[in-house]
Length: 143
Image (cartoon, rainbow, N blue to C red; front, side):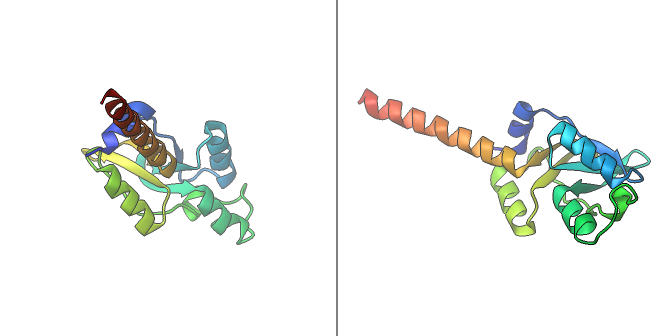
């Protein structure tokens, strides 16, 4: 069974975070600069939530808030739904589908060691399928 640790081995374990007191504008700028759709939120150095593009649209844009006057803590999603490096890819897909979320922080021994997105999962699964197709094609052609 394929596990999250395999995605992290390829993707890396970088964790982008923003302080809960930062403005939503600053968080959005950091996400744009990093080309990501979510980032973790910290309070006094401890990860306590996540802020996503969806949070921005629902809790800033649709509510008519000013992104330069709204703190990240006001729109972040909390508590976090967290997985471990040992979580299977199938479990991740089921969790993302069931909870209608696109990002999962990965924690090990209480520390966040990475974040995976639905895009990471799809890319991983697609690569695995391509490898299987190649092996099957080679097997069939060898006969």
